Structures are given as structure tokens and as C-alpha cells.
Amino acid sequence: MEQKDRLQSLSADELWSLRKDVDAKLARILLKRKNMLERRLEQLQPRPKGHLQLAR
Image 1 (cartoon, rainbow, N blue to C red):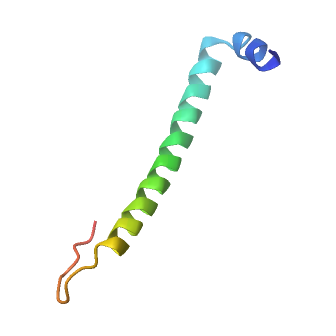
Image 2 (cartoon, helix red, strand yellow):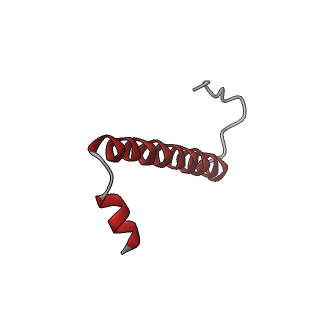
């Protein structure tokens, strides 16, 4: 309950700032996971010899 009370006591600007912080952190986490999954997928799908991989 203490955390809920703290959130309720925040101003609109503070809540908006908190949301932006959470959004940014989630975006970083999702990007790291996406990159990890793409690397794993590349390991499961070997490229034929002579295949050029384009830079992203």
C-alpha cells in the first residue's frame, strides 16, 4: 500500500516524468532482447558460403 500512496501523492508532472523513465527503460530492455533473439536466430539459420550480409 505504501507504494500506491506514494504514486497518488505525485503531481501530474512527476507522474509524466516517471512514465517517460519507465518507457525508456522498457525500450532499452526490449531492444536488448530483440538483438539477442536475432543473434540466436542467425545461429540457427546458417548462411550459405559466399553470402554477403548487409550492414544494418
